[in-house]
Image (cartoon, rainbow, N blue to C red):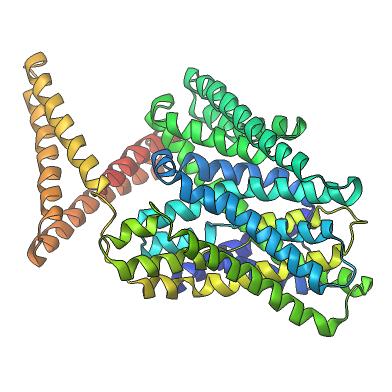
Length: 521
């Protein structure tokens, strides 16, 4: 009962804090961490104990998979080298910088423990940043860089982390570690491709939306567990499987299955992210208790040491982001061709988006109980998470506003092009249908009228639309919504009167919901 009660309390906290964050315009992961911290300090409130192995297994695969299958593969390909510099180069540089600092200032810490700390705090968590990006608006290029980095840097960091932990007992050989890195990466990608292709075909063969969604929930674990079993990168296996499935999502599912799939995964991602960030806050009391009991370092030195570690993590990212932005073909150079000042502000935004999250804390908690300076490493990890996720996260909206993006994307507006192409394809299909079905003119007239109306609104959006035109568009939407709501109320009244059953109501409601969603298309 304690576990169920704790889970219920945490889900309620997630819902309340999300609504507060939405109304206040703040990144909700930062508030989730603070809410978990408050719960952790209340001794009378039951809470779930954070088991690191369970966190990595339950949280990491589905969260990575959800991000991967919704990430545009084409944008990743276009920016593969900038993303690789962040996901591989920056992680390794941060690991070395933090390790060198820890070895220099922490008495008696071995190199293996210092490198473990560096690998733990190196990977970023993009959720808090991208939640702000989508609400306030930043270029698609920035979102691609930050999300692409977070997709792949977990793999780099966890491989380096395992090498450091292994070195604490078995020694460390640089050449062997480099070879293991390549094997783990290649093996993880190969398993991810195989799992993605096979399970995509299975889902395509099925014709039952709930079963297809159930299979989709198993895909990340089907990639992660075999990869971990053969000691290759489970993270890369999940990410690769997600990219493969996302590429085939438009052809392997029916419209109803796709709607249920996306809705289900949106809820799964929200709940798991919420629980993960709340659990980060809940871990603080145990971390502090372990540090006080160990007496590894005097309390008067902890504050200064924590501040220095945070400074190294943040400044290393800024230095790397700005230096690599000077390279030929960098994203900043592309933006600078149009607006040099904006390009530097966007570079600063990418640097400020290096927030840490649950993966870092789970990796720290997974350290062996007899690992050198374990409690100190746990504490420093938590401080880095708190400083970046809460400190930088809560100020991120201010930074986004300071950037003053003009709304112009790098290249043509893909959404407008896609809508125009879709409308023209529909008009062509109507023309062909008129020759094949000459007795169905009324239906074809309605379809054509609807397409021409969309085309007219699209042309108005692309031109200098007057306030009168915008008001007309708003009135059209209000009229459509009033008709849809009247129909919805009518069928609910029929159900309440016992004239139709709930199954019929759900079918009719779904049609009306889809019609309302199509108003935004």
